[in-house]
Length: 409
Image (tube, rainbow, N blue to C red; front, side, top):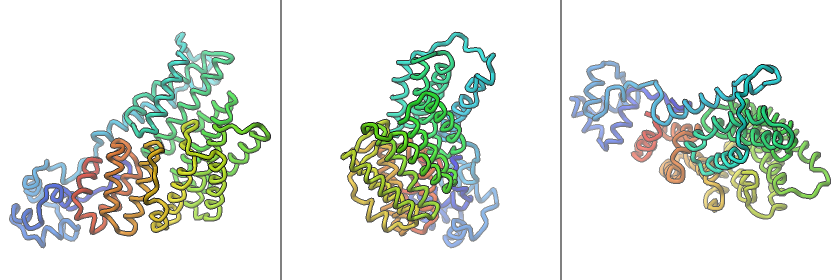
């Protein structure tokens, strides 16, 4: 099951399937020879549903298999597909040939990957990530990562430097997608591998980009204080290395976007002052750029900084500030992935103030933009769970249908 799906009781499953079928409690209760009061207690877990004969009657009346009410704990659908792809990525990351100096006998079988093909594939995968096309990202990543690792081992000189940059990009793509599907530990391994490649081959913007992925990985697994510390040290390093050299828009974008997850991590750590400081610095950098841009797939600019102000407000537990900052912002120029994440923030804020219909509408808007993103992202599951547990959410058929499409019951 997805990591944040609710473990629904049989009674709760009855409620959601009844809602999806459009049946009232009176009608369903009548179909199984019971009272509406009994069914209401069952659905709210105030009366046990532990007799197989009764559960079978309810399943027949609802037109669903018995397993749909008692629960099937095996993975299925797109979640099973995600698990397969994650396993493939894990296998490549754990390949002993990745650390070939330790295993000098590792055989490369004479393979010499085409660096131009790898560059095109890396750009395709990163573009697919920003377009929220998770299926394309997962399909391309294992082979891209494996071939980039091989290229670093077999090439020398300038070709090896280019291969190292491609390996860093592949690892960053791994880290980004893995945090989204609830695999922060594996994302950290990918980040570490990518950061090593970026440092080995001297690409400063890629170094900063991988540091940003490291911040994401750390605060995704709840290590907020460590994530804040990494942000501070990484920002200082980038400023020092840039020094008096001419402004580089790639590096400026990477530096600015590094500050944004740092602000979120500080907020989640309860450090409002640091969060505001990072946001203020990010605004200054965005002003220097002067517009929204997407250098090195950062999607950095004034609009993204504004969206992160809303994310920080959410992390500080201030949903009304999220709505004041986030509702009505024009995100059309940003990559789809960033637009969807903003809709998650706004939907979560509406759920927090118990405006469930508005929250559901934002989640449906996100689903229209990017189906696989909504269906697979750990945050979307968390938001839907919260709504399903509210009184208004239990009455919203649109929410029931969405949860069903997400494989949550």
